Length: 240
Image (cartoon, rainbow, N blue to C red; front, side, top):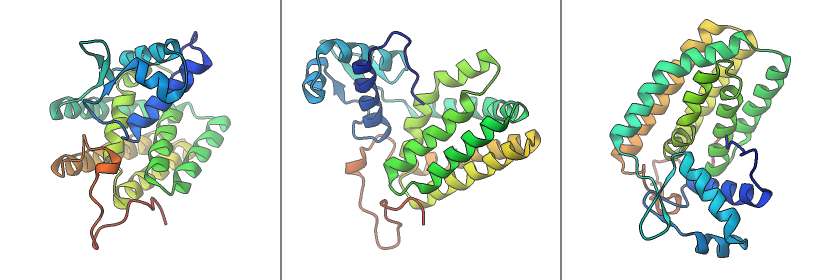
Protein backbone atom coordinates (compact mmCIF):
# COMPACT_ATOMS: atom_id res chain seq x y z
CA UNK A 1 0.00 0.00 0.00
CA UNK A 2 1.21 3.55 -0.58
CA UNK A 3 3.79 4.77 1.92
CA UNK A 4 3.42 8.26 3.32
CA UNK A 5 6.37 10.59 3.48
CA UNK A 6 6.75 11.96 6.99
CA UNK A 7 7.10 15.48 5.61
CA UNK A 8 4.59 15.30 2.76
CA UNK A 9 1.75 17.79 2.54
CA UNK A 10 -1.92 16.74 2.29
CA UNK A 11 -2.01 18.11 -1.27
CA UNK A 12 1.09 16.13 -2.26
CA UNK A 13 -0.52 13.02 -0.74
CA UNK A 14 -3.66 13.63 -2.79
CA UNK A 15 -1.71 14.06 -6.02
CA UNK A 16 0.45 11.02 -5.26
CA UNK A 17 -2.60 8.85 -4.49
CA UNK A 18 -4.37 10.07 -7.63
CA UNK A 19 -1.42 9.30 -9.88
CA UNK A 20 -0.82 5.98 -8.19
CA UNK A 21 -4.47 5.08 -8.71
CA UNK A 22 -4.09 5.96 -12.40
CA UNK A 23 -1.08 3.64 -12.65
CA UNK A 24 -2.52 0.68 -10.75
CA UNK A 25 -5.87 1.01 -12.55
CA UNK A 26 -3.91 1.39 -15.80
CA UNK A 27 -5.60 4.61 -16.89
CA UNK A 28 -2.05 5.81 -17.55
CA UNK A 29 0.14 3.30 -19.36
CA UNK A 30 3.80 2.43 -19.67
CA UNK A 31 5.68 5.10 -21.60
CA UNK A 32 3.12 7.85 -20.96
CA UNK A 33 4.69 11.21 -20.11
CA UNK A 34 3.83 12.99 -16.88
CA UNK A 35 4.22 16.75 -17.15
CA UNK A 36 4.16 18.76 -13.94
CA UNK A 37 2.18 21.72 -15.30
CA UNK A 38 -0.44 19.51 -16.98
CA UNK A 39 -1.02 17.47 -13.83
CA UNK A 40 -1.32 20.64 -11.76
CA UNK A 41 -4.06 21.86 -14.10
CA UNK A 42 -5.84 18.49 -14.10
CA UNK A 43 -5.88 18.29 -10.31
CA UNK A 44 -6.39 22.01 -9.71
CA UNK A 45 -3.34 22.38 -7.46
CA UNK A 46 -0.09 24.31 -7.61
CA UNK A 47 3.00 22.73 -9.12
CA UNK A 48 4.74 22.29 -5.74
CA UNK A 49 2.67 19.29 -4.50
CA UNK A 50 2.81 17.80 -8.00
CA UNK A 51 6.59 18.07 -7.99
CA UNK A 52 6.73 16.32 -4.61
CA UNK A 53 4.35 13.57 -5.71
CA UNK A 54 6.34 12.94 -8.89
CA UNK A 55 9.56 12.76 -6.89
CA UNK A 56 8.01 10.12 -4.63
CA UNK A 57 6.82 8.09 -7.61
CA UNK A 58 10.34 8.25 -9.03
CA UNK A 59 11.74 7.02 -5.71
CA UNK A 60 9.21 4.18 -5.83
CA UNK A 61 10.70 3.16 -9.18
CA UNK A 62 7.46 3.74 -11.10
CA UNK A 63 8.50 6.69 -13.27
CA UNK A 64 11.75 8.02 -14.64
CA UNK A 65 12.97 11.49 -15.56
CA UNK A 66 12.95 12.43 -19.24
CA UNK A 67 14.38 15.21 -21.38
CA UNK A 68 13.06 17.79 -21.92
CA UNK A 69 11.73 18.21 -18.38
CA UNK A 70 9.16 15.73 -17.25
CA UNK A 71 8.74 12.09 -16.36
CA UNK A 72 7.65 8.91 -18.12
CA UNK A 73 5.99 5.83 -16.66
CA UNK A 74 8.45 2.96 -16.65
CA UNK A 75 8.17 0.17 -19.18
CA UNK A 76 9.58 -2.86 -17.37
CA UNK A 77 10.87 -5.58 -19.63
CA UNK A 78 9.54 -9.10 -19.42
CA UNK A 79 12.89 -10.13 -17.95
CA UNK A 80 12.55 -7.42 -15.28
CA UNK A 81 9.17 -8.75 -14.25
CA UNK A 82 10.33 -12.35 -14.22
CA UNK A 83 13.21 -11.33 -11.96
CA UNK A 84 10.73 -9.73 -9.57
CA UNK A 85 8.76 -12.97 -9.50
CA UNK A 86 11.99 -14.83 -8.70
CA UNK A 87 12.44 -12.53 -5.70
CA UNK A 88 8.85 -13.10 -4.66
CA UNK A 89 9.25 -16.88 -4.86
CA UNK A 90 12.37 -16.75 -2.73
CA UNK A 91 11.19 -14.30 -0.07
CA UNK A 92 7.43 -14.01 0.20
CA UNK A 93 6.62 -17.53 1.50
CA UNK A 94 9.22 -17.16 4.24
CA UNK A 95 8.12 -13.60 5.00
CA UNK A 96 4.43 -14.44 5.27
CA UNK A 97 5.19 -17.44 7.48
CA UNK A 98 7.06 -15.12 9.84
CA UNK A 99 4.02 -12.82 9.96
CA UNK A 100 1.82 -15.78 10.85
CA UNK A 101 4.15 -16.78 13.67
CA UNK A 102 3.78 -13.28 15.10
CA UNK A 103 0.02 -13.15 14.60
CA UNK A 104 -2.22 -11.56 17.22
CA UNK A 105 -5.82 -10.60 17.82
CA UNK A 106 -5.51 -7.19 16.16
CA UNK A 107 -4.04 -8.91 13.12
CA UNK A 108 -6.97 -11.31 13.07
CA UNK A 109 -9.36 -8.37 12.82
CA UNK A 110 -7.27 -6.60 10.18
CA UNK A 111 -6.82 -9.60 7.89
CA UNK A 112 -10.50 -10.53 8.20
CA UNK A 113 -11.47 -6.99 7.17
CA UNK A 114 -8.97 -7.01 4.29
CA UNK A 115 -10.36 -10.30 3.04
CA UNK A 116 -13.95 -9.04 3.35
CA UNK A 117 -13.06 -6.01 1.22
CA UNK A 118 -11.54 -8.28 -1.39
CA UNK A 119 -14.63 -10.51 -1.43
CA UNK A 120 -16.93 -7.52 -1.82
CA UNK A 121 -15.05 -6.13 -4.83
CA UNK A 122 -17.35 -5.91 -7.84
CA UNK A 123 -15.27 -4.10 -10.43
CA UNK A 124 -11.74 -4.53 -11.68
CA UNK A 125 -10.49 -1.32 -9.97
CA UNK A 126 -12.10 -2.44 -6.70
CA UNK A 127 -10.41 -5.83 -7.02
CA UNK A 128 -7.05 -4.17 -7.69
CA UNK A 129 -7.30 -1.92 -4.64
CA UNK A 130 -8.52 -4.78 -2.46
CA UNK A 131 -5.50 -6.87 -3.47
CA UNK A 132 -3.23 -3.92 -2.67
CA UNK A 133 -4.84 -3.62 0.76
CA UNK A 134 -4.49 -7.31 1.49
CA UNK A 135 -0.82 -7.30 0.52
CA UNK A 136 -0.28 -4.18 2.60
CA UNK A 137 -1.66 -5.97 5.66
CA UNK A 138 1.07 -8.57 5.81
CA UNK A 139 3.96 -6.60 4.32
CA UNK A 140 3.67 -4.01 7.11
CA UNK A 141 3.75 -6.78 9.74
CA UNK A 142 7.07 -8.29 8.72
CA UNK A 143 9.23 -7.92 11.83
CA UNK A 144 12.56 -8.21 9.97
CA UNK A 145 13.15 -4.63 8.86
CA UNK A 146 15.55 -5.50 6.04
CA UNK A 147 13.24 -8.18 4.68
CA UNK A 148 10.30 -5.77 4.87
CA UNK A 149 12.20 -3.03 3.06
CA UNK A 150 13.43 -5.46 0.39
CA UNK A 151 9.86 -6.46 -0.45
CA UNK A 152 8.67 -2.86 -0.24
CA UNK A 153 11.23 -1.91 -2.84
CA UNK A 154 9.31 -3.86 -5.45
CA UNK A 155 5.85 -3.41 -3.94
CA UNK A 156 4.36 -0.95 -6.41
CA UNK A 157 5.92 -2.71 -9.40
CA UNK A 158 4.30 -5.91 -8.14
CA UNK A 159 0.93 -4.18 -7.86
CA UNK A 160 1.09 -2.65 -11.33
CA UNK A 161 1.94 -6.03 -12.86
CA UNK A 162 -0.75 -7.62 -10.69
CA UNK A 163 -3.31 -5.16 -12.04
CA UNK A 164 -2.56 -6.37 -15.57
CA UNK A 165 -3.24 -9.95 -14.50
CA UNK A 166 -6.65 -9.27 -12.90
CA UNK A 167 -8.50 -8.46 -16.10
CA UNK A 168 -10.69 -11.61 -16.11
CA UNK A 169 -13.14 -12.82 -13.51
CA UNK A 170 -11.27 -16.13 -13.43
CA UNK A 171 -8.04 -14.40 -12.41
CA UNK A 172 -9.77 -12.25 -9.80
CA UNK A 173 -11.51 -15.30 -8.34
CA UNK A 174 -8.21 -17.17 -8.17
CA UNK A 175 -6.60 -14.22 -6.36
CA UNK A 176 -9.53 -13.94 -3.96
CA UNK A 177 -9.49 -17.67 -3.17
CA UNK A 178 -5.74 -17.60 -2.67
CA UNK A 179 -6.07 -14.67 -0.26
CA UNK A 180 -8.74 -16.60 1.65
CA UNK A 181 -6.35 -19.52 2.10
CA UNK A 182 -3.61 -17.16 3.28
CA UNK A 183 -5.98 -15.51 5.75
CA UNK A 184 -7.01 -18.86 7.16
CA UNK A 185 -3.40 -19.89 7.79
CA UNK A 186 -2.93 -16.61 9.68
CA UNK A 187 -6.03 -17.20 11.79
CA UNK A 188 -4.86 -20.79 12.47
CA UNK A 189 -1.30 -19.60 13.28
CA UNK A 190 -0.08 -22.34 10.92
CA UNK A 191 3.25 -21.06 9.62
CA UNK A 192 4.01 -24.19 7.59
CA UNK A 193 0.67 -24.00 5.78
CA UNK A 194 1.20 -20.26 5.34
CA UNK A 195 4.46 -20.83 3.50
CA UNK A 196 2.84 -23.39 1.21
CA UNK A 197 -0.18 -21.17 0.55
CA UNK A 198 1.96 -18.15 -0.29
CA UNK A 199 4.10 -20.19 -2.65
CA UNK A 200 0.93 -21.26 -4.50
CA UNK A 201 -0.37 -17.67 -4.47
CA UNK A 202 2.79 -16.37 -6.16
CA UNK A 203 2.72 -19.16 -8.75
CA UNK A 204 -0.91 -18.39 -9.58
CA UNK A 205 0.01 -14.74 -10.08
CA UNK A 206 2.88 -15.74 -12.36
CA UNK A 207 0.59 -17.97 -14.40
CA UNK A 208 -1.80 -15.10 -15.06
CA UNK A 209 1.13 -12.79 -15.74
CA UNK A 210 2.30 -15.15 -18.51
CA UNK A 211 -1.22 -15.26 -19.91
CA UNK A 212 -1.46 -11.45 -19.90
CA UNK A 213 1.94 -11.26 -21.57
CA UNK A 214 0.86 -13.70 -24.28
CA UNK A 215 -2.26 -11.61 -24.89
CA UNK A 216 -0.20 -8.39 -24.99
CA UNK A 217 -2.03 -6.89 -22.01
CA UNK A 218 0.85 -6.02 -19.69
CA UNK A 219 1.22 -2.50 -21.05
CA UNK A 220 -2.37 -1.97 -22.20
CA UNK A 221 -4.55 0.66 -20.57
CA UNK A 222 -7.79 -0.57 -19.03
CA UNK A 223 -10.00 1.28 -21.53
CA UNK A 224 -7.97 -0.07 -24.47
CA UNK A 225 -8.51 -3.71 -23.59
CA UNK A 226 -10.63 -5.83 -25.93
CA UNK A 227 -14.24 -6.39 -24.97
CA UNK A 228 -14.65 -10.03 -23.81
CA UNK A 229 -16.20 -12.32 -26.36
CA UNK A 230 -19.27 -14.47 -25.72
CA UNK A 231 -17.19 -17.23 -24.15
CA UNK A 232 -15.17 -14.91 -21.93
CA UNK A 233 -16.25 -13.50 -18.56
CA UNK A 234 -17.10 -9.81 -18.55
CA UNK A 235 -14.81 -7.48 -16.66
CA UNK A 236 -17.54 -5.72 -14.71
CA UNK A 237 -18.00 -8.47 -12.15
CA UNK A 238 -15.09 -9.49 -10.00
CA UNK A 239 -17.04 -11.89 -7.81
CA UNK A 240 -20.45 -13.54 -7.80
